[in-house]
Image 1: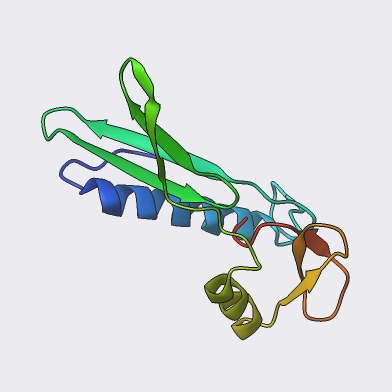
Image 2: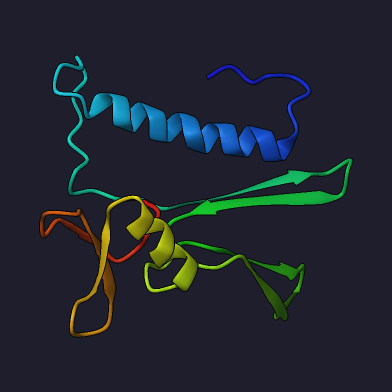
Length: 128
């Protein structure tokens, strides 16, 4: 995709994530010439953009991923940026259920996301 000049990093990252989601959804259509069945799939992504002149780092993530940053040469002073999007977090569970999904504890360790009427896809992340 062509890079637009003058787009704020936040907007560019959000637009890129949304464009990727839109393309996956379009290719899920059985009539699409490049059919992609993602019904049992998921992914995560973490992106870091360093605006050197502005001395700013932009982090965007989705799914079960996060970024950690530290000062050069000092890994003991690391900072976790963001949090995993886990389905057992109250706000994530509410978001999933408000859209017709279900969050179920698997009896072992994970809370999993299922469709409203089936035992699939069973993801243990809430944004994939």
